[in-house]
Each structure stands twice: as structure tokens, then as C-alpha cells.
Length: 250
Image 1 (cartoon, rainbow, N blue to C red):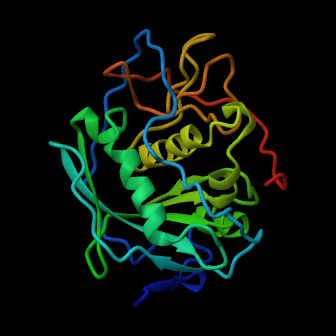
Image 2 (image 1 turned 135 degrees about the horizontal axis):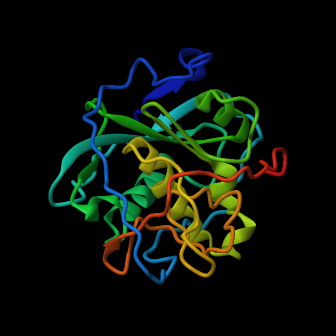
């Protein structure tokens, strides 16, 4: 199979959007806080087999999904994205990861259902507005450009980075619901690409806003991977907690 690759030699030292990414239209989703109860995991957003294995630091070279996907969403700004998996990661390939991302976007709780966005995965050689990388922890730090971390995922300009350690293992707050955590991390980092900032827990026992940093703590909220809960846009007050990053505990 023909494969497209990009190396970190093109990205090292960049703390803004990569030069090879096309400009994107901007918009925003208005916040709304409403009483809600969330059912975290829906759909087949997990990769069941084989087991995902990865080094702490990969070589910084990515293979990209070759097949285009469907447009997800009926109205709103159309953004195109490509999906890449770092070489050295085994147990998930670009096509499988791309299918998982597209399935998350297609859920009635994800961003396209707000009516503000339509999202489409591009095929080989097509123009794209942003890239979703599945990257090793050390490569995550290079792509994110925000210093040593190795634990979280991020968005940096037109680069959305999913840390493979989190994709494979989740976080303690999600109590082993790996499907829900994968839905959360894709929706959270994509939300940053769509112009959303971090948000706070709206109250004990309520679903966490998808833009809360649930990877680092829930602060009395319950896990929630969706920007839409009970059919309505769901959000909290703007802000973020001073939670420590676990660092080497990948």
C-alpha cells in the first residue's frame, strides 16, 4: 500500500500550526449550561485487538489514512481533516484510527450535531484544514510545543495530538471505560481546534463539560465525552484547574 509520511524534522521547534497545513475557517459554538445526565460511551469507538504497543519515543514519522470519509453533519462550516499514526505504534493503523475518529464525530453527541460544523476525513493528496495525530508520548511533546509532559494530549494550531498512551490505557477517572475516554479525548482536542477553551465542572455529580480537562481530574463531576448531553449543547464556565500532570506515568 502506498503511504504518505511526514517527519518531525519539519515540525521541531514549531509552537504554532505546521506550515504544511491549509488555513481553516473559524467559528464558535455558543456555551450553554443545562441540567443533564450523560451516558459516557456509545458506539464502537474502541479498537478491540490486537493490543496497542508503543515506545515512549517514536521516530517522528507518520503514516496517513488513504481513504476519504463521509461528510459528518448536515450544516455549518465544513472542515476537512487527515489522520496519521506514528510509526513504531503497533495494534492500530491509520485506517482503523481514522475510522474510530469518524465514528466519534458521527455520534449525535459530537460537534457536528451542534449544527455549527461539518467534518470530513480527506483522502490521499486532498486539501485539509487540520491533522489528528496518534503519537508516542515523547513525540507528543514535540508536536504540542509546550514543554515536557508525555501524559496529556493537545491541540497546537492546526495540529490535534492524541497521546497513544492515553488512547491505549485511558485515565483513572474513567474507571476502565476506554471507549468513553477515547470519545472524550477526540472531542476535547477537536473542540480546541473549533475555538473552544477549557471549562469548569458546573457542580458536584453533574456531567463534566467536554472541555473540562478530564484527563487530569473531574472535581466532583462525572465523566462525559460529549459536547451535547440529552440533546442540548452542554458546557461549563470558562476556566481550568491547577491539576498536576503525572508526567512519566504513561
